[in-house]
Image (cartoon, rainbow, N blue to C red):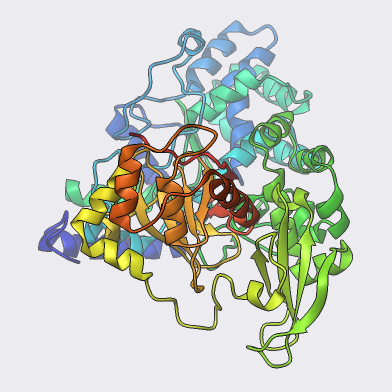
Length: 603
């Protein structure tokens, strides 16, 4: 453990000990010790310890139980004293619920509720909010040692159990989970109430279980507000080191997922019994749920993207992917995932292109091309770089990526079945297959034009006029981790004043330049860095005339100003490359939206 970061030598030794203890606790979660630690958490908050701790099998079951405890007193019949006792026992404890975070003030709706709450689930702890330097070597060492489980870090699990509660995609499973949750409540709540009140309370609990699920989103909102999200493991350890001891949360967290702290009752849910991820650590499974809990509540994901179950098993057909309407696929996804609110999300966020893209990957490009079928461009040709391999170029319907694209498929040879997305103006399968480089070769060297700019302060000043900041290019980071949909290399080379990032794409002979803004949009700037710079210094013929500073920047950078005709031609070339250069958010699997004018000069 490095001593020149946040921690000293002695603290480094404590980190090693706490990490070792953590790994043991994760491997052998001890519910008894977790309950004792929970009592200590209550003590630290100045609360009276809960009389009962009830374990539910999934966060969905926990949410159902929490709603019953928060609102079940309304089912009481003729026993007002029992109602008072119920409300007192089942009031959410929120003081200090969010650790070192500043809690938001209650909204106008919330301030008249029986308890103060936030309507959304708390975020997983943020290193930035806690004031940590994310680049500190000791912080990175703790993250590398402890890690964060994908089911806790990825907020989609929380979204799924919320939406399954609002509108079950699997009503039969919801009924089973609900029945089990209420059975646990009946078993666990008995010690909270005097014997003379138990008949009324148990009758109300049964009424909650037997009644149709109420469509009261405001009540569910309070349930989400009262939920405590899984803790950030690495930050828990660092906070414990700052205090000089482990603390109860380090014993509680390995055994607990989402949980609810009430006055006399605590509801705990365990981590999932099954979690699958891809090589990048994203939630992913090719033949079933990526996350599954003991009671059957599950979530399907494809490389981090939440998808309906039937997209994974048995998979969507090629014809549906290529030619099904957005509305039909949106309805299919909403039905599979449940909840009218999710249908609204599908519509507002327009994630259908993401679902189509995932569905193509699930099916495989070769099968998709054969079964759609895709229209072939010209005849297949032999691949000179791979004996026995044949290359074929196909048109991809615009619906798949939201715009037209082409794809080169390999058949035979060492990489049979692999695909390369290529520009829509590609006509030669051999040239198209290697336009971003060949994955079997060494990465391309840095363009000489970029190396020259790095060496020259004068050239960097010229770029600054274009809002292309390269003074700290070795530390350029985009606002979030992204990758190219086709898998080619994406290298950040500069930043924009608004938070956007410039990237070189692939390892091919020209390496196209991509600009990704900070709001989920992207634009292709040129087929190489020189073209990108020419585009940037030239004025849009439909928006104004060149400025003197443009001419000076062009002269300094050794590029030329484009004529109006050339400028429009470059835009068309960029459009042709757009579907083949789609950046995707690595953590969640959502693709960026192509916005041909998202880049602009701040000055």
